[in-house]
Length: 79
Image 1 (spheres, rainbow, N blue to C red):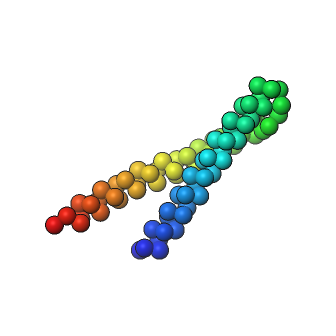
Image 2: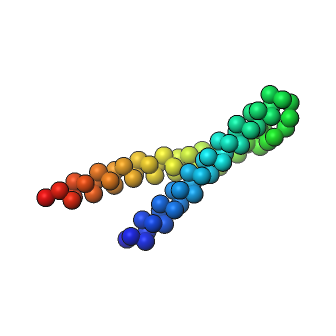
């Protein structure tokens, strides 16, 4: 069970860095858009629904699940 928890945490950490990457890409692409330089904003928009939204959802679900698991562990640890 401990191994599953470690792999889950690694997966969630990878997803979090992926979210940071997509956010940085959005900021750079928006900056390029203001300067009339194509830095992939249209590609970012095309990837929004099929890729970026699920990644965000996984990170949010993981955060909620982590909080719930932590509370359950605290309740079970109390005598």
